[in-house]
Amino acid sequence: MQKKWWHGKTAYQIYPKSFLDTNGDGIGDLRGIISKLDYLKDLGVDIVWLSPIYVSPLADQGYDIADYYNIDPRFGTMEDMDELLSEAKKRDMYILMDLVVNHCSDEHEWFKKACEDPDGPYGKFFYIKDIVDGKYPCNWRSYFGGPVWEPLPGHPDKCYLHVFHKKQPDLNWENPALREEVYKMINWWLDKGLAGFRIDAIINIKKALPFRDYPADRDDGLSDIGKMLHEAKGVGEFLGEMRDRCFKPHDAFTVGEVFNEKAEELPDFIGDNGYFSTMFDFAETVFGGSQAGWHEASGCSPDDYRNCVFGTQKKIGDIGYISNIIENHDEPRGVSRYIPEGEATVTAKKLLATVYFNVKGLPWIYQGQEIGMENIPVSSIDEVDDISSIDNYKVALEAGVAPETALHFVEMYGRDNARTPFQWTSGENAGFTTGTPWLRVNPNKSEINLADEQADPDSLFNYYKKLIALRKSPEYAETLVYGGFEPYLADVPRVMAYFREGADKRLLILANYQKEARELPLPEGERKAVLSNLPEVGFTESGVFLEGYQAVILEI
Image (cartoon, rainbow, N blue to C red):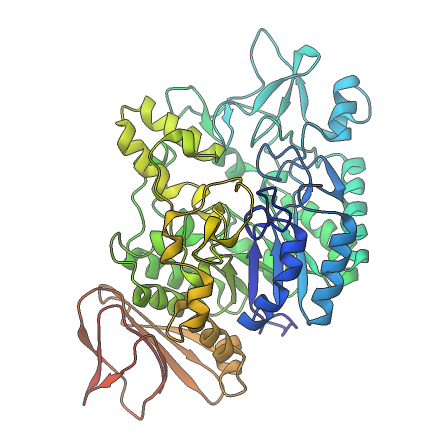
């Protein structure tokens, strides 16, 4: 694996709509991000990914793009974006944007022209097919529920494909003219000074053609689209072309949102000549899920979480560099997901931070994670904004689940959990806005907020700063960035432990992933405590005594 400039960095995701509002309209904006660059620099962040800020009707919170070349006025102006790029550069920080090119918005000029003339050049930018005898071309189910086909506006005899929301028509990557337009746009942004992209839902750009039905897996007669993706071949031709035409000439940093990849394809995705610089590890994210809906999900226990992380580390090896997360804008809060219900203390949150942050790969922090933001209570589906949550709630009710139980699954898995406004203070609207926030603030803002944590040297926020500083320290950087990974005590329940071994240092990350204290064995030899989430490290003759949810980093 070739060493890259970004390997030793720390990355941070911003969901702009919920980060900081500076004009009182209840929506976060670019000026809010600019004003907090020093905060991010102080935390130790180097790379910042912005979820979409392009012009959009926000049917799917900006992942439905109506104009790839302009900033949505809700978030600011292109002048604001230029200032953000300039100010970030002054601080040796790198800005990424979301690259959303599996689909665009139905309000994009391309789609409008396709509706005017389905047989014309822009009609070929999309998948537009005839409706024959009232039947769609195939029975795939969209990610947000319902068929992937929708009647084409103005043409009741035709339909268009959308694997996500009906306002997100899929782009036809089989068309070279479409690809040229996409590459032109990517290079325009990179020439402007963008460091690179997070690449959204990219596996979906390749369909298994011709369209055909798959066995139905619900009473709606539709099939999970994953069955099609499993059969789709040749996405690498598109991704390699995009790499060579756009990313390579700019030495751009790219992180792929990749699901359904095959093990043998990993070198193609993130090897030395991979399509992307890195890709996110979603093993624990998808673990326990069910095609039937959230009400059938089994959750992810501490042992499940450990096994998922270790599985990815083994699978990746030295092929490339993975990106490690515990949450993002599409997922519930990590501390509410990977710590058992009722046990998410500050100590437990520090444990989760310790074990995920120090495995091999690039660590990512999602906004609010560094202060331990949690899932938000839901008392009515009317409080929910997320279209995926609303669909899953409906699916649960249709399956006979009681409304209060269906709401609980929304609380557990809904995307609103990550999208509630950042809790800057304990004051009105958590300091996010002087207006009415677009999405309600979590009522626990008095207990969890940045202002209080900055003032508390023992807070989760200050612990994240220690983790970041340790990974960048001259003494341990080589080991934590490039050192080998070896599981330890992998069969012991509610323990997550592993070695990171460099040329001249050997570190053991050891976590007691439960409420009860216990003694755990250590290898023979000298041992030194490098970092602990509790004040004392109780070494014994044969090992170490750890309190409940204590995590330690030891030099062995």
